[in-house]
Image (cartoon, rainbow, N blue to C red; front, top):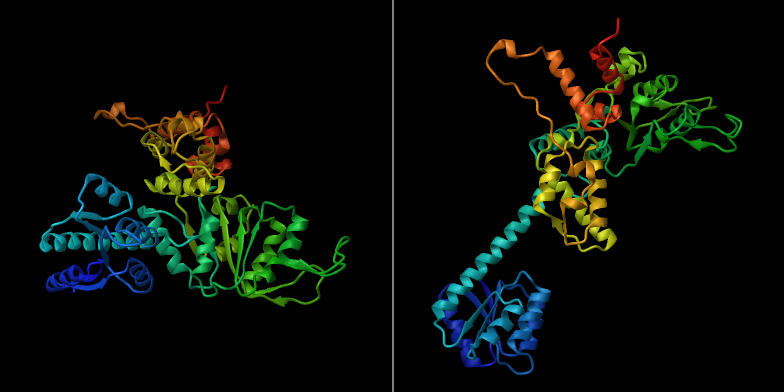
Length: 452
């Protein structure tokens, strides 16, 4: 059977003729004389296509077609009529008809057009299915680049374990999104996900927030407080900016990881806790260990399973996927009629280095949506730094070895070029170069000629 077709024809003899002829050509055909009953039947049963006459009592075929396409846009409608004027054809197309066929017609022609309508319906359904499959679920990292496919594959393999996870990556790459995906695909997706930014609180408040305290543990402790470690029991504790955890608190966190027990401030006894710890940082923890700013034993305990989130500049055309995602969200939130990117704007987005990564892209698109005067984001709507950005290139030319330069000279030139591109902002330059600030300062100090 090619497909199930409903023929709406108020002439019973014509309806029977069409059912007989189309059935011989592999269609399952049902006929309906009254348009009202046809609409009710379409609401209750599943059909693959509709064939309707135009001139009928009470509801004509154009109105029926409009009703069907409004409620079932996936269902193709072929309109047939003995009054094959241009006006009728245009009215049928405006009503959403897939095809229009004037009488008299050959049944072979009608069968051909139904075949085409059913093929179109199957193709549309397949495209929707593929789009749904290729689009990550809500909250999943977005992207189709090889780097993002590798990231999602790694998350899927890491998530089932209960070992600590260390997520590394530049600022703005979406490390918390990856942490939430790890939790969602883990052993306890229904458990709590508790997040803390270790750089957001001073040490005394951070200790109380993280480990909790008993009443009277310190001057302002008028009541007991359950710390985030215990709040995350049965789920995931996400510690963002772990490199900023004060040295004095690091042994206590290490004990939580090793013994799965925590002692709130002022408490006499330790309390069992079962929370998976996922930490994130945009800094080089190995360097922090070497410089004495981070305990080596805690680093090794956290760095059991590592997930590195790629920077946006390494994700190719994911920039445009993310831009379209942020555009839709921003337009829906603000009620603006912005629906896409102009070619020029897309080229600018692809050519920019994105030192602030996904967060910078989101801010740029939200700004562009707010400023856009058309239904597309134009180059003029983008921030100036993106409009005026020119990519720096390192070129190796010539075959004569005397024309080549040492690696430290190339590094010096490149660091200088990046600093120039970001207006001398060393913090931003460090992000682009993939260095922490102290490492960049050391390189700059080494590369800067000293006066005698």
